[in-house]
Length: 252
Image 1 (cartoon, helix red, strand yellow):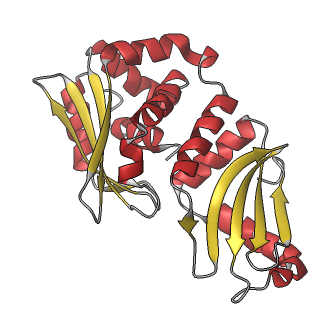
Image 2 (image 1 turned 180 degrees about the vertical axis):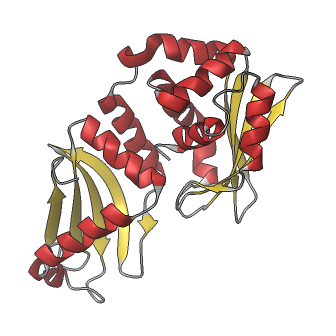
């Protein structure tokens, strides 16, 4: 969830940097849909409600990673995250933000659960978009963005990774953003993870490096900007024993 706004706004301007009219940008962006935003889901449509001068971006979300019912109670948190991302927008995202401002347009992000069909949406007014750009770095430091991303991730916890593994929380511990996992030792004894720690680190390194999920890549970049590594802490349900695998910023 941390980079949803960045992903879609970048896509919106990728093929229309030279076009000045918001309607043209929206039309071009919509032609490219649907677009994957990683395991979380996909962007399905970009439209302009001319009656309210609002750009509307629709997503179809994987409810394993995006709990619609929970997010309905956390719209302020979602809105703050998008606000923060706009505040520090660079490159194509900055161009799109300026285009919204030039048209005095609003921005609505609308999320629909793939299984339930339930929806939740947030809207930033043109005034709020302008305010976000003006507050900029003072409001949205890398650490602030990272903390907001972690809060949103924890709203989805616990998350089932596989039959033996459940992600229970993501927290900042010292120099690392640490994922906490509970392992059912009836299926995977924790001592096996410890015994194969070096091999597991290499497997994780390969997975991180080759994973095409844009959300993961942007989260890694955000951790690096905040000078935090990423760690994975595994705890056996039955024994309580743990094993932690760490990647420093230099290793990410």
